[in-house]
Image 1 (cartoon, rainbow over the protein chains, first blue to last red):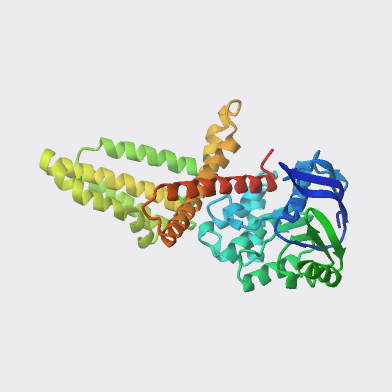
Image 2: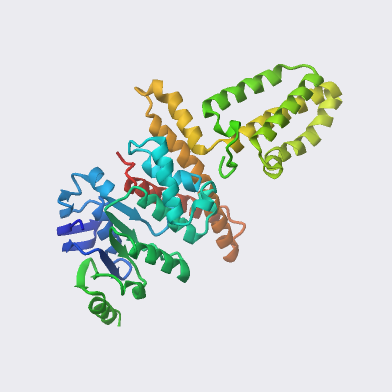
Length: 226
Length: 197
């Protein structure tokens, strides 16, 4: 597993501090991040592939400083957003998955083969030529997942990937994420889905207030909510 | 082009996009120059043969060509009134053939093929134009049409629910604000997919 290190990371949006002196080393395969809205969870995971740069401190992935090597880090880190509509770029399902591979110096045949394999893996092959915007919410999130995983990243970061989904699709996406061989970091509000994770981090007001195995960390989070 | 492509493996599907586009332009130009109804009739038969060759379902073809017939129902009698039935027939034939050929191109060509074709066309000008970025711009433009349509439809629903149907401001402001937020989110997603370099 790659090591993701946060060393004294702080970040503010204008006057509002969203992260305060974060020091973490993430080495486990499945890591969950929970916390109230505005606690800094999304900012924390956006730092991992350089979508946000820290005001102070450094974030490194596999020894690479993200601020200085954002392009190389993004090839290692796949990112799944809450709303798949914002992640879909191309008009049809297959074209959107293939789009990820277009700047990777692959031949058209390699792109087609890998795209087809990704669509089959996520049960989207029947929809390959369908307009992406006409898929259901669950299928759109599967498409987002396929478009990320076709590039074979070493780390998959998902920011509330199940928030807009019904219970069945939420479970399906979570099971798919849990079944990945990659290191997976998931921000979520669905606490029951975190039992199978190796480590859970609880955020509050820009700080890490609990960092433990799921039972202990979620216990601390529930106390915080009480 | 959004969602109109009909998958297939026919000769027309497999033909290079730039060849199809050049032939489409040439055919529309030639049809515009034809002056006999018989010649246009022969062209129409050839277009039907092309649709059969492409194995495009009748329903998909009708969706593309049908709307032009409604326009012709009004335009042909008016044209006949002022310029005679022959001129009206020529106008209708030319328009019908041009629309049918354009529909055939759309139904048998993927957006990716169109983008790659335009990127190839722009390659000689790469000193001045970034062909990849132009391709991405076109793709995003096409992608954003259903996205903005969805935003407008949701805002109209919300406006109705709050009883502010009459207010243009109550439509424009949320549509613009939500479109800007969506643009921001798409930009972030593009960066995450490695397209910010």
